[in-house]
Structure formats: C-alpha cells, structure tokens
Image 1 (cartoon, rainbow, N blue to C red):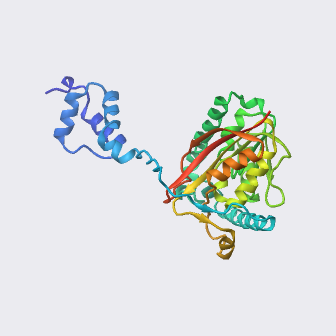
Image 2 (cartoon, one colour):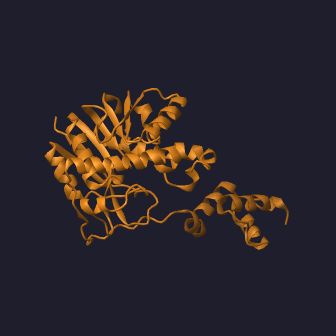
Image 3 (cartoon, rainbow, N blue to C red):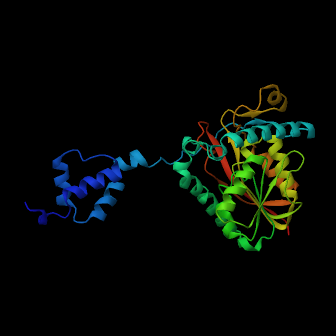
Length: 324
C-alpha cells in the first residue's frame, strides 16, 4: 500500500516512540497499525503521553494522604536561651561548611546539583524555585494583597537565592537573610550577575534573629524544618512579633514526622553537624505561638514534602496575619 494511504510515516511513528516513551516500537506490525490508525502526528503524540506505559514510567504517583489515626510526636519545643544559642551555632557551622563545599546541592539535595554536575543542570536549578514563588503569589492573592504594597519584605533562609530570583520581580525590594555567609555570597554574586538589583543580603543567627526590626511580609521556605524545635519556635516567635499591624507571615514547616521525637538533653548528647537535620514543630505548638504573638491563622495547607526524604511526614504552608 502506498504511503499516501497512511496518515503517518514509518519514521514519524519511530520518532514519537523515541521522544515520548524513550524506546523503539515493538515491531513493524505495531508501526503499521499506528500508521493506519492515526492521521495526525500531534494526536498520536498525545495518545502516547496518555498511555498506561507513559503514566507508569514517567508520571509520579499521587502522594498518599496520611491516615487520621497517627500518634503525636513527643516534642519538647522549649529550651533556655543558652541552649537555643548552642543549637543555632551548630546549625551555622553545618550550613557554612556545606555552603563552601556544595551550596546549590544544600539548597536542593539532588546529585545533579553537586558542584561537578551543576553546569550541565544550571537551568533546571534556576527554574526550581518557580513553583514556590507561584505559591507565595497565590497565597497573597487569596489574602487580597498586592505584592508591591509590601514595603518591608524579608525572605528568611534565602540560601543561594533559588526562590529569591523568582520573587524579586514582584516586589519593590526584598531583604534576603540566611544563617550562612557562604550561601549569601553565592546568592549576591549570582543574582547580581543576573541583573536583579532590588535585593539586600543580611546574615542572621544566634545574636540576630531577623534582618529588620519590623517587617510587613515575612517569607520562609525550606528553613524551619532544619532547625531543632526550640530554635524554630524562637525564630517564629521573633518573626511574628516583628510583623507590622496587618502584616503577613507566609512560611513552610514540617509539623509531623513518623517516629520523630525531640528532647534537648538527648539532642546535645548526640554528635552534631555531620548531616542535614530534619525536624518537626507540632501543630499545637505552632497554633499556640500564633495566638501568643497577637496574630491569627489565615491559612493552613498541606505542602510538598521536605525534599527527597524516606520519612513519612507532614509539611504545611502557613499564612498568619498580625492584627491591624
């Protein structure tokens, strides 16, 4: 039968298989069947992306919702000032060390973002904060707030600016803060080279919780989950108290981890600083703090998990508002 009788050529069928399913068709009979059944290459390509094979191989499964009968984490979230200072000093030591060795990997711990692989994956890294930036803007829109109405914006835990580069075009100015000076240096150099000029970079830590005495919008992603609960509570307390009347705090944190517990004495007794820590601040502690600081909870939503971790956990996106 001449080629004019078919909608697709043999080469188009093979190319579509290779581009979409990353393999060749099973046989010439399969190729012939597709040529007979499909008159349009676009429709054929769409059918391949909707196939069971494509979904099984390339579409991640929907995350399984956590059951409602989970036990609470046993967490002591309060510690004295010297204890919190020790926790933060250990965190600073770790993040500055990893900031010197592998700053981009520390922000997104995947092998492709290690220093030796970063050049080939630079575009993917730079684009990786876009979804989080959309989440921020959508939350502000639900609250009826325009980004440029916020005069004093703080992004706490900015790292190398993975999220900052996507937030900057929407705000007049952002103060980007981090506990690690090496991360701040990378962020300032890279975002400056990208022509992003409406940023200030400030180091924070045990001696200085926040970069500004008061702010209208406080943003914090992928940071609180790395702090021991007393240190996370200390930082959140400072941030919420520093909100101007009517100001918003929009942050992400982990509130439950399967099998997790925290007790300050046991924490200090174990060796510290060898690995990236993952912690949970339980929701009751969070809700009590919001009320204690004169704020109200506007939103609590489930958020994507804390990176590529084997633990079952609950990550939340929180929007709190200071009374006007």
